[in-house]
Length: 508
Image (cartoon, rainbow, N blue to C red; front, side):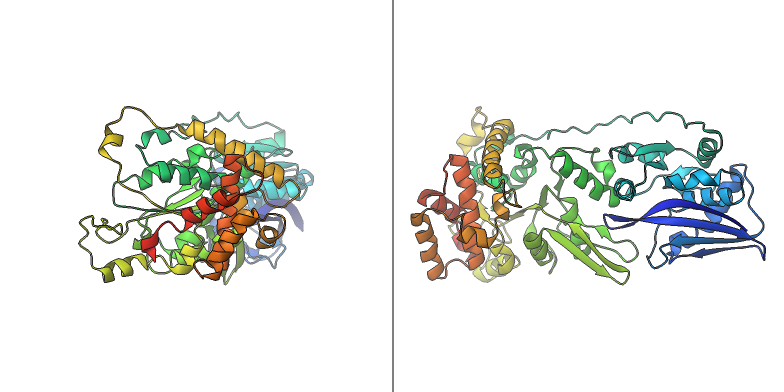
């Protein structure tokens, strides 16, 4: 009997498990048996591995081959097990020094020619391998720079099976991999100077960026709602290295790294079309559960334009992630939780024709059609939106003015100063942003000044705001206070926060 063992990583969401790949070659009828709950893609590895081994100039044994993936109870999916199976197979034949194979981990899909193809989710897989004590890992050359983002583990990128064999058999290192040319910039190319006028929406953007508050823009078409939303990343502080690594890992699992540079410190901006489905919004899939738009926007912005045009249930599917900051997807193969802590920004017209504003603006819609249109934004969802602003059309004077408004850089400096104040205040807490202050803390150590609390208590007693709205206004008031340099939100801070939340009277 000949036996060899290699290591691989099986991903479940962002979490990984170290898998032992055992290959046994014994006497008996020639065949290939794969054990360990493989899916269809993994079950097809026999033909890929066989062709890759033969086309790489090696011998395929005409004997009974048994491949076991341990732990056997864990479902395994994908084609990333091809390379470790091929290496263990060669080791079991004595063609490779089997005693050194177990000190490595291997990731890669094999082509019939023997090339090692790139995979999704290599970054979280390398993180998992490091967690389990692996010190060296072989990955596809196209995934090398992604895997190399992880420190404390030796990463080697290979182009084909021959390079792996030469490395393990003769110690010949693969050729150096050149860094690809990147057109991505760590700074947003969009600037708030491009927006004419809109003082109130710009103020709402700044307060929203300070505390990470959710935002709703309502206004006629062409007033700048989308322009304002697209410039939010330019006023947000850069991601920390830990946050950037987490964002990159999510985009790696989704196979979305072509749209984002590795370890980019620019907060992600995700803008799904209003025809998107609930599964695309929150994530899903039958065999592979992929993250949705909510997780791709983690530590960034999820912007939904023409929000009332979304299909029924799509917007309401955001209610749970808005509260918990994560998404749990359950399928027959198991449950996976992805992080989803993002700023939600919605943009909508006030009515089907877009001209309604509570005043006579030439709106041709009936009151019934207006009500039906706005009711597509459900009450429970609106209750979770911290700031609601009506975006007026810019005036002729504002459009003709040659003077530019404040740049994103100037606004970002104020946002960073305000966030540093909040970080110092929350130094002994588990949260970092004002939007994350739990209700219990708002009722105790993070109360507003007495006059401000009285204002909110009166509105709560008159049932003009809900209990959730009460807490939302207090959180926004803290962001306004940080912006103004107030130690505690005073009555004016609370009044402005209440006005930003309840400023759209015609929403009812």
